Amino acid sequence: MSTSFERPYRPVDLNVSMAKGFSLTSMAETLMEEATSATSGRASLTLAHGDETTLVLVALKAGNTLEEHQAPAAATVITLSGNIIFTSSAEKITLEQGEAVTFTADVLHAVYASEDSAFLIVIGGKGSE
Image 1 (cartoon, rainbow, N blue to C red):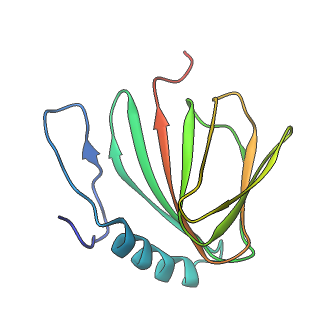
Image 2 (image 1 turned 180 degrees about the vertical axis):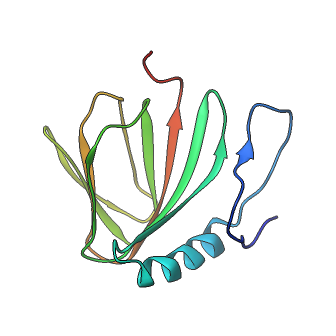
Image 3 (image 1 turned 90 degrees about the vertical axis):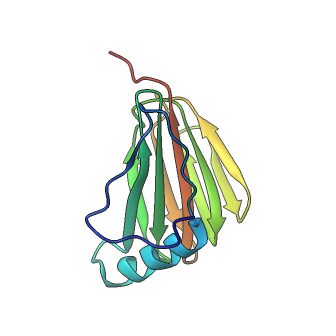
């Protein structure tokens, strides 16, 4: 199983027959190191991408925010470590390790890290054309 990565990192192509494992904890630790030195307080890595699904690993330092945006398709955010707050116009959801939120592409949302956090974003399906 892949335990680390080097930049530039080429995402796994999910449009060809294959299987690949990821050491999310190790990769998230490396991303957190990158986030520490980034002015944005975040770092991310697209792990896999295909016509139907994209998988993105994100590290976000405490006190930083992914500003409000829309996903290109329905998505799920899964907290791997730390504590994040997912906000939309309708909800404010606190997510701790092992918790997730799912939402449709039309939902404007932001993510705030109340402590150093790592999370996985699974974007599924095709975006609107």
